[in-house]
Image 1 (spheres, rainbow, N blue to C red):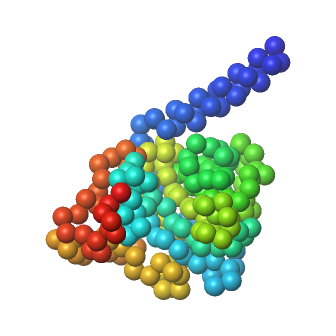
Image 2: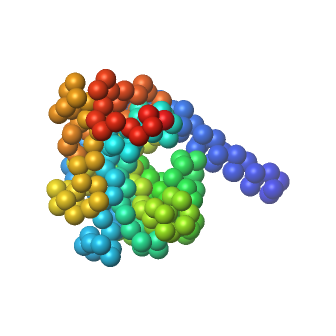
Length: 239
């Protein structure tokens, strides 16, 4: 009986995670509005020896080049923020919440954590160096360490960074984190390696060219950035 109970608990937990991937997207009325209610995922000031903004959210040139492969299920856009940081940098919860997943099925390997917040919002912390010590169901506070930044290439040399996403709790909608996170984004964009970093459509060259104007992403929706006259051209064509 005890073995059955443990197995059943595992099946129920797995089923809950699976359902989250196919659950209907939550309506606007059920989701908290952005009011800079969250903090940054790192303590201390940004800098070349601490952390910097790497890739922004949205219509980035990097996402455009892989809009049909890596980002094909995310409408061709980069659905989070990348913060460059040395491997092992403590990663902190951006707000109070409850741990929903540890190493769940959301990608961003080698390890990740999902935290549920008030207002049906969830934050994902990806490319963590090691499995987080927090537990599913554990309550965490804003600023609490929930992991260590790692490298998407598993080397701690190739691409050390934290990937941070802000989603609705159904995991079907992905929001621009900027209006939700209290930070000096203008200074972060200037200091980091991201720079401008957005893909142009020369038919409408002002579209999605600022960090604040990036669109919401819907899982599995049509690709948004199939531009008629893209600039810069994707080397070797889009993938």
